[in-house]
Length: 94
Image (tube, rainbow, N blue to C red; front, side, top):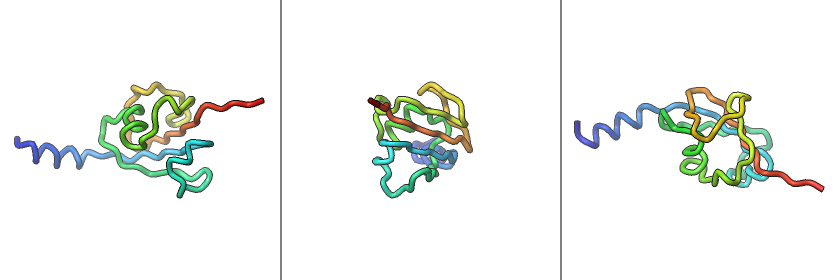
């Protein structure tokens, strides 16, 4: 199979996930309202680290806490269609 055909097929295997950027991470998508979810189409098999660094262009070090469907997950966790991802930066208080 030629490379162009493989690329076309790969683009068709997309899944939709929603992402909520909380607190200071909202600066990466300033048009989003507070609490508004960002719907994204990502290639099937995308993991959380790829979602952050390649798609959202957020360094994983900037995310202190993340949930997928309300469950804490590792960055290597692959996403599934319909997943709801929530991200928080490190926070400090005094």
